[in-house]
Image (tube, rainbow, N blue to C red):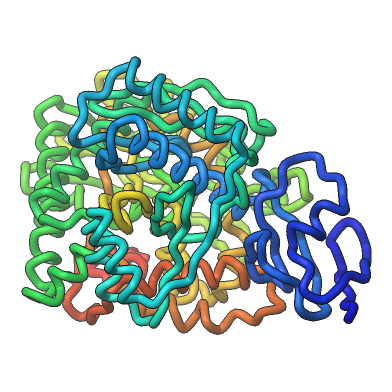
Length: 548
């Protein structure tokens, strides 16, 4: 029996029912290696059969889902090779730095020689072009396999799975569990590199935008320190995986987790305030990507400055947007609100200079409905003991406050760098934390659908990559706004919005991925979240009037 398949970019094709996606893929020529496919907007691995008339889009590394599949598959290849070289040693994928993974071998002292042996084994396995096989197993069987392999982090995770089956992958006899689709064979995994870093190493991936080329691995020393601090916080809480968080909730409840997590935030903010006052800083510039909690952080930092006898004044750089008619447009012709050219930098700097000079300044308010800057008599003058706090995505860009003497400024970069991983081999992307936050906030405070937020997200991330993250190492201090318990709260708000996305919507694929991600967390009532928590900026009920 034949079915009709519309192959995106290649037209319709009649094929035999039951033909695999790989078989269909082999009938075409593609510029890059195909890693998986979308069938009627649903992600499928290439071994999946085609059973009905449908639309098929083949995905390579340039697609976000294809890139994630590449990362997962190379990670499996690295784990397989490390266990082969080092006699089944434990491998931990700790966190991401600039889309590469920082990994550790807890029972091994990492050296260049060991890394070379692992990388050689990886390349040898790529040459063999071994299949990466998928098995759907009963949940109890999967837990038994994980226990037999000593993967107790996975056993703890799987205890809380609601489904009756679990997917495992096998590479040359090694079973492992991965949180998403994989490439079909090791031969697809042509480019990677292992680079020694700190106590572990960087598993480096090709840049999606550079067609499999490896970018130079920058040190990112400051951001690495933040992740190390987050690891210390995780050890304080005894929570470093989703499974351990769920077990903590089951055994003692979530209240203690909330109290300790929020106390860690408060202590960090108090330390930053102490530094600002001790060093007599007059201007604090706060920057970070979207949904990192800049607004609430600025307000809470202001409270800590008051404790030190200093009067803070918080100003949002968003009020300095140029009028909508002068906003630059991106390559697609849409307004580009991410570029610094969307801000009136000249007025910002003039206002800062005037305030530091003792003058009174009439501060603007941007009306997002009319797209116009307005002046409503909001005047400000600084006393000698006052501190000006300016927050916005471009706060660390040298064009902002460039004329201020270096000794008078203190620059803080804030982002949500989650200290949680799903398990040893599956990390939670920091962008997922921020995306879920934004979906909830956009619905609560802007009336946007989840589909609209998801549709905008690639553009937001492109802007962050160009205009925000390149300046993060310029910061005098970092603040990690991630809360170890937040997904337990956010899921009750996000899941209904995600389930509401229709299968025909382009955002459907991403919604299904996020639903699966949230499903791993046990839920908890948001009533337990303190009113001054950064999380309140997204779910509502903030103690700060402009908290959203």
